[in-house]
Length: 324
Image 1 (cartoon, rainbow, N blue to C red):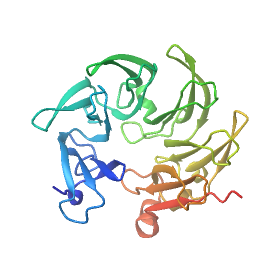
Image 2 (image 1 turned 30 degrees about the vertical axis):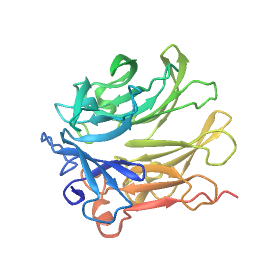
Image 3 (image 1 turned 180 degrees about the vertical axis):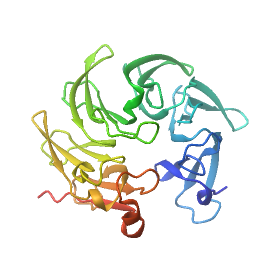
Image 4 (image 1 turned 120 degrees about the vertical axis):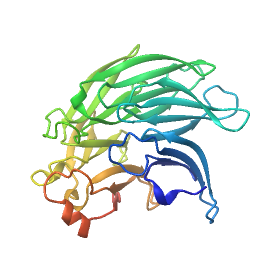
């Protein structure tokens, strides 16, 4: 059942693509019309997709992972929703359909990272929630799809949490939290000085301490990568709800890691698109890290660029690393 034509994809992974569709529109809707399906990219036919889940509340992510070590993958879904939303683990039953184990029935589930946090051989989950009760929550896997919940960080509702990732930034053997906030399309659309890029260093025993902040209007994602191949992790960030008229230089930023201190550089493509997505990879096959960006010049657009983007804007862009 191929439904690529009638919904909006927001997340995809692997060659046999697992695709998450938020629904018929990215606008706020109370309708449960999101779904997830796999698409066989090697099969060139109209029947190359298999529907897995339906009637989801504005889902933003679906992950496949064997959480109970029985050799069969479960599905993990983040349903952002509006008033209603969920974080769920779905187990396939004998009939071949999936049954939900709801870990949180609150809206705002945005992104989940699978990690064996306590090194016990079982996959744990860490999830970013936005939408009112903004927080990062650890779900420790206790076996048989039972989880122990612990809130690691909590943010005010006006933060507009947009992304997080787990990475050991200081090479101390503990995973730190990279976090961006800048979703600015709801009840207060003024620019906010606390929107931007944050680094929370892992202090051990589930405690985190903020060690870095850089203000970015409308910050939407950060990607860690050793851009200059010097052995440490640099950062690249994008902004979606940014001040494109007067401050386009913060739309795409490169943070050079200089012995644990970050030096920000502006990448001058801010007015070429409204960057919603960002990913890394060796695009040109020359052995270094490049970046792919996707633009979405719709919705509430600060400044006067919407018409320009509609006529001449880029749908996407590659940032090729020319390091010699």
